[in-house]
Amino acid sequence: MREIIEAREGYILTDGATYGTTIYLAEGADASAFYEITREEYDAIFAAEEAHE
Amino acid sequence: MAIVTTDDKHYRDIAEALRIPVGATDKIKPEEMAERIGKVGEQLYHMGESTGYGIGYNDGKDEGVEEGAKAEYDRFWDAFQENGNRTNYRYAFYGSSWNDSAFTPKYPIKCSGVAQDAFYTSCITDTKVDIYFLAGVTTSRTFATGTLKTIRRLVVDESVVFTNTFLNATALETLYVDGIIGQNGFNVQYATRLSRDSIVSIINALSSTTSGLTVTFSKTAVNKAFEQLAGANDGANGAEWQDLIATRPNWTISLV
Image (tube, rainbow over all chains, first blue to last red; front, side, top):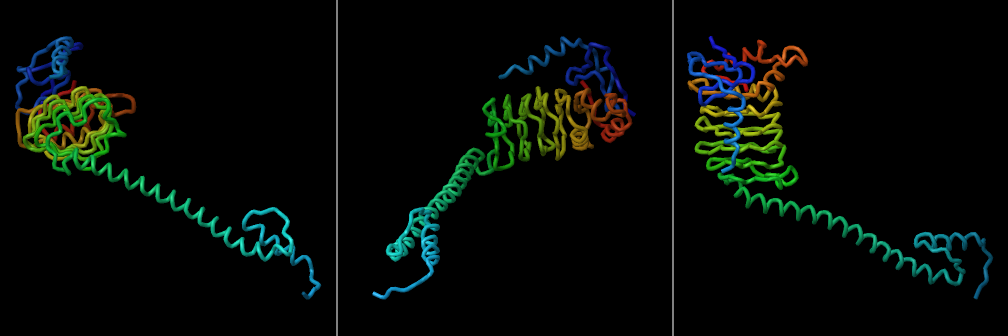
């Protein structure tokens, strides 16, 4: 049975690699690995990803 | 010389028969008719020659232009895609000059080298041909463009890693995935208009034997694609979506 975790309004869940507001964990995955970051922090992470090499 | 009596209607008919074919309008006297008969044949010949030449020229020109365009198309795409053997497509269709009119590939796009930035910032809306991500390919920002609506068929090798492959693919509506997604990083979070069939094809392509991997979708797309009532945008809460992702319990599925 999957565990589903949801971020609070304005926040994004992450484990450092996966990001989402709703995360359907794989069976056996550890929900405690996830923590919340703000939307601004998330946007900053992906703005860096968009910077072209 | 014998003088005979005849109906002058015959002369009028003969004159008319001499005028009509060549578009003449002058009066023709009986004593001129013999000479005109001789000339009308010559006139008709030249008219036919001119018309025939014109028709032949135009038909030949049209056919020649078409053949020439085809020859140039083949020459360019045979060279650009190395007769279908090209494997490195880095920056191949980079930039706004690449649009649907210019992008008319002859061969499927088979990438086993670098597919990085292949369509980065292009104005192409439809990939038109099958695209293969073969073993060893790098996929960073391959489809990082806000204009691409349709990826007709993306065939994926199980070993392929996805790295921001669909970054900013905000226009993407159709993405049919074939093969097996067996590595991390498949992320279409920017595709808020991704169709239901596309999402289903992606889920169905997820490896059923791996563990610890994540696939990411746009929550807006899922809510719309699987909505239970028209306009409710509640698809992520619905049974159809839940049943779909239940087929891949070994995958973490994230909605952004």
